[in-house]
Image (cartoon, rainbow, N blue to C red; front, side, top):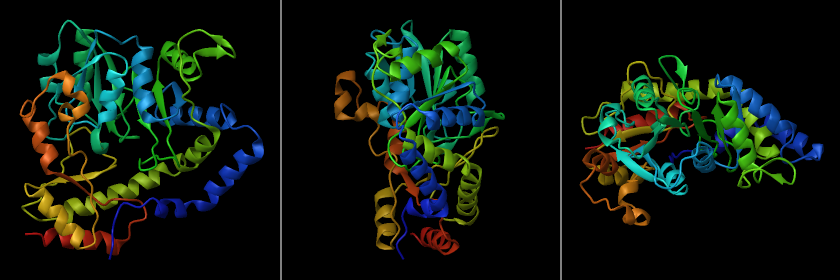
Length: 363
């Protein structure tokens, strides 16, 4: 048996609807900034309890352009989790700002108790990442942002529809940033992303920035880029959005079995914070003998991934930031121990049981 995160199973579940949506776009003769995008933006904003949604080319653009729209740039500092995917940091650096790293908590999210010690006179914003699909400790972080008069941006790339204290992620901050990369819980069939916001000003500015800086053709009001969620991806995302609740319910069922049935003292299972919900984009365990554990699973036909093996502060491309190994010990420990077990829509009971039995047999 070979088990790995598969995208084809989910596609086959709704293949007829996807094909109908694709043909509808092809027949329309309109492929960029059309009715499909307008409909998706309206539907997704409503789904996420937000006033505005602006579709973009990818999740990285949602981060980079949101910071630009909020006026954050050279000389500014932005608080960011030390254990995030590098895209979060790229969004900061591409605007000329400086990332200020903060260690994660026991739930792999930004540790709210460590934020204020990292704030300086140059700090302009906090970026929260709802890593692996679990909502961060948002009430405490929102309170810090309000008290310190800082912008708050949420990287929700892995946490579509997760919530904290009943409030959807992406609506706690000034902007919520989303990726619809194919592997995401709400994944497209290529690169695409979006932001949500309750701010009319930010939404209007983002619509201009994404379209060469103009709200009226050939009238360029701000310095913009080309970052538009195309009609095909918008139409396909509308199909998946209609099934998102059942898809997440199925992921939670798999995660529930893992949590209940994996009993191996060498494997540390993830926890869920009180008040937070988890949509299980990834099921991440920790093991002190991670590399050996991964090799064992590979031999048994179970392919796993490491999210993420090298923290941003130790990446060669950011050597100029001056960080050194040992500076963020919790982040570095996680990087050496984390391993993502297969969890995908369409996973069979036999496959789930095989993963459980194989993990439990590891010594």
